[in-house]
Structure formats: C-alpha cells, structure tokens
Length: 135
Image (tube, rainbow, N blue to C red; front, side, top):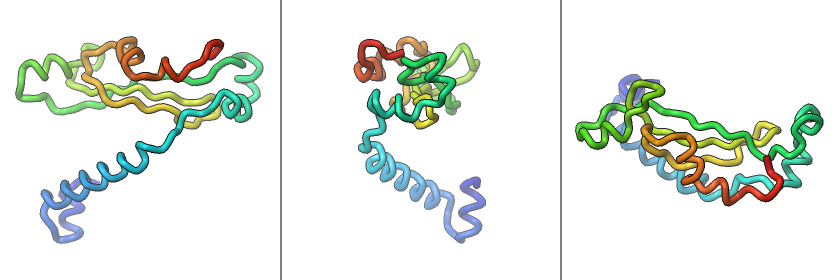
C-alpha cells in the first residue's frame, strides 16, 4: 500500500509511516542479514532438479543482476553514478544468486546503476564463495 493510504487507515502522519517502515526495514536487515544463506555443494546437489542434474550437474548458483529505479539525486555527480544506460534512468543494482532448486543463496549490497554486471560480480564477493569445478 502507499504510505498515504496507511497513514489514513491508522490516522497517523505520512512521516510516522515512513519512520516505522524504515525502522522495521533496518531491523529486518540486521536480523535476517546475519543469517548465512549460501548452500554447500552437497546441499545444492541433493536438492537439484533432475533436468539440472542431467544437463548441468556442476551448476552451483544462477546469477542475475537486477536494477531498482530510484529518484535522480540533486548532485550531478551522483546522478551520473546512478544513471543506467540500459534502463535509461537512475538506478541501483544488486546481484542475486539462486540455487538450481530455486532457493536464494546470495544477495549483494546495492551498487550504483552505472557499474557493469561484471564489475558488480567481482566486487560483490560471490566469486570467493565458489569452489573449483562450480559452474
């Protein structure tokens, strides 16, 4: 729901709604962000769908960078850093890793939209989690 609708339902200001949402988002990040979600090679193999096991048995993780649109910053420097040529708007980008079984196993921090997917993959730390033979 939009913040205005929530504010009207509970009879509070939009600012209060924003503060509550930000507080809960930060709390959930601290609590859930500390939980390890990277799967061991054995766990990936045990939960791998049969088609993956047949055609791509060494797949450990499926990677994708995704972009989240944001407002254009007032600073021209920040505008150029967050501008995505691909989306033709200002964005933040993050790298998501998914095991063949569909479980999310990696979530990077957000990067400015001007960075390439390759740069984000290198900076995110996921390459340090992979072992020789992983695809």
